[in-house]
Each structure stands twice: as C-alpha cells, then as structure tokens.
Amino acid sequence: MQDLMIRLDDLSDPRIEAFMQEHLVDMRAVSPPESVHALDMDQLRQPNIAFWSAWLTGADGDMLVGTGALKRLDTSHAELKSMRTSTHYRGRGIARQMLDHLLQEACARGFARVTLETGTQPYFEPARQLYLQNGFVECGPFADYCLDPSSFFMTRALKVNASNRAEPLAHNARLPAATQESP
Image 1: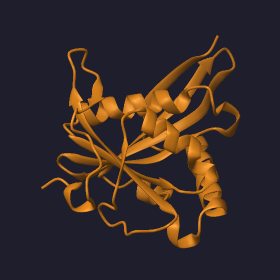
Image 2: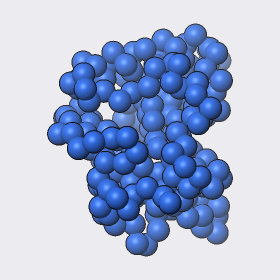
Image 3: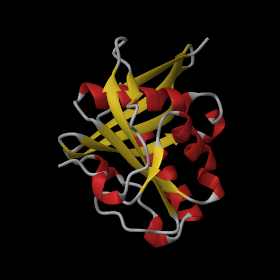
Image 4: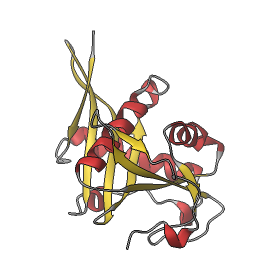
C-alpha cells in the first residue's frame, strides 16, 4: 500500500529538477513559444513562490508523482503554477489532491483569490475540467498576461468554511479582467 504525501519543497532534490524539465519540454511541445508560461527552476526559487511536491511513499521508497505552486501576486491574490502529475499516474486523483492542498494553503496564507492560466489545446482539457469541477470559473487575463488564443484564464474566490476547508464564494462568477486583481 502506498500513501500520498504532499510537502512544501525546497527544490533541492534532483528528481524535482528532472520532473520540472519534463514539464517544460511538454509545454513547449504542445504550445506556441510565446504561449509557454511554465516556470523554470530559477523562477520557481523566487521568494514570492511556494512549491509543493507529491510523493507516493511505500516499501520501495518515495516516488515523485506531482507538483504544484502558489505565486503571490499581492497580499490577497495568488496564481496557481506548475501543476503537473506524472504521466504514469494521471487519472488517479493526484492532481485533485494537490489542488485541494494548494487551495488550503492559499486560505491559510490569507489569499482571497486564486487565479491560473492553462492552455486551450486538447492536451489541457483534463486540467480545465479539474479546475471547473473545483469551483474555478473563466476570467480574463490577469497580472502580466495578455489575451492569447492559446491561453485559458480561470479564477476562484476563497473562503474558509467551518471545517477549515477552502470553498468557492457564492458570488464567484465570471468577472472582467480588470476586477480580477486585488487592490
């Protein structure tokens, strides 16, 4: 039996670098060069980014199966970055568990909104469905992003319920880009 462990990561394990390099290769293979917004290792080490890794733990040791990050845009707004599940473990709920974890972390860190950019290509359809099923709604470009036919923008307002779990606010609806950023 293997258990999934999600931990805040300092990016020092060489398996993380290899995993993220694979992520960059995949993003460059499915998106036009000007539409690749995946972060490299130096960008992931910036002080406004917190990075988590997901590991299956068992008798054979730990196996890296997923990653995700939060990039602080301002005191109440974070961007979801570097969401990736190992090819061999896709469709097993790892991305959902990572997303749940990141939303909890966003709440714990005082963010009122989490926004993301993903692709419009068929490759990204499972990701778009995951986000839609978890309370994200389509929005316009945010932060430094521009309108791009290869980019799909989504956002989710957060609150903490009685069980200390992140959940969408009732008024979480599609908003124009100008209202997505926090003051």
